Amino acid sequence: MLQDIFPHNFNNSYIRCTPTNDSLVFVYSAGYFLLSPSKAPAAYLPCYAELPEQIKTHSVQYLFAIDNVAIFLLDLDRAIFLSLDWKCCPVTTTIKDASPWMPLVAITAAQLSHWYQNHKYCSRCGHSLSHSTTERALECQRCQIIEYPKIAPIVIIAVVHEGKLLMTHYADKTIKPYVLIAGFVEIGESLEEAARREVLEEVGLQIADVKYFGSQPWGLSDSLATGFFATIKHESPIVLEYRELADARWFTPHELPHELDNGSLTAAMIEAFRHEEIGV
Ligand SMILES: [Zn+2]
Image (cartoon, rainbow, N blue to C red; front, side, top):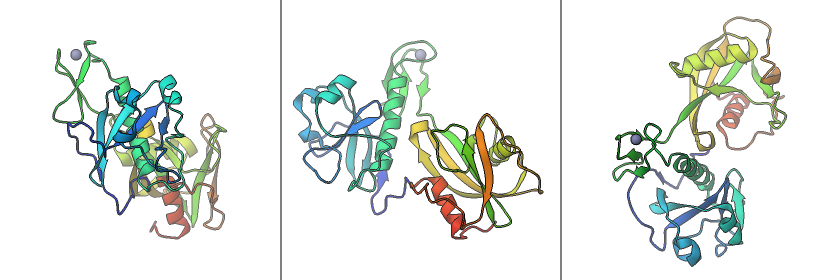
């Protein structure tokens, strides 16, 4: 999964620091980031020393470290970003030959970029927000409000019945593969309650034996995805939520599609069912 970058270490402790020549820089603009031209063909982030002088005048923000190498964010507007003429990639692309930490770094750096971009002013009084000197937070000096990065939990539910896994197909045709039932946790809910509600809403089934499987950060929707396996309380027909889903069906391990092999939590849960690694 995204966070599985062994033997590398992701250190998200916040420190106030400035880049050195060896620091890596996530040069970012609207969903795309730059790869270092000098490290080709192995895709890699540029280090601070190799940045063109004209963009070193822009401010950089410390993000986190990989293996004690600091990574900084440098946000650029689109015109300057494209004028550099370096290879750029969407943050969701799997980059051939990139370090195993690249997807986690790219998605989490993009998450923080969006957070900084969208939190320039205090939502209570309208005053400019400033960076905290002690933690990853933004502060209003006028009314003392403190803003932290938002993390919105998601539940993903693998419903199993008589050796078959329930998978659904979204009505939104841009999402092609069959996937597991999933949704955001709502206010006042536990993860287990959210899992029960989502399955009932989407396919009309009541679930039992809800068991935690694992979790995965997913910064592009400010999310923390949590995965659960469950059985059904009693046999009843599937009743689709037609505004969201086009289909829902039961798959045996041999019938399961292979098209979702993307390192996601959903893919890990499907593979666990395929290889009978779960005990529901
Ligand atoms: Zn304020």
